[in-house]
Length: 90
Image (tube, rainbow, N blue to C red):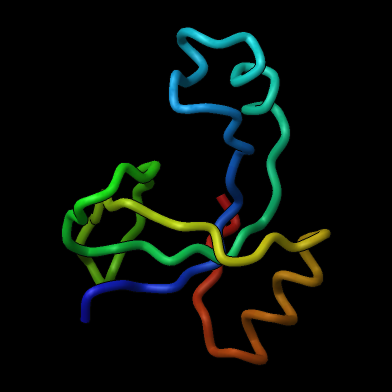
């Protein structure tokens, strides 16, 4: 298994500089939505944002790609149930 798909509540991303250096990133961090993400369990050869998830009992910090954004929590729940995907409500 090289990757895991999960639905997680995520802040928006503005640019690679991050909220410490960029005012627009600080504003974007305030806006969160549920996203279907693909988390890679091994490092890749391209720059991606990082996130923390739990796979079984193991804590994984991995690179991820956003596959889909949901308009609200209910849409994310329905998608998770229909497709057998874990959802994180944090």
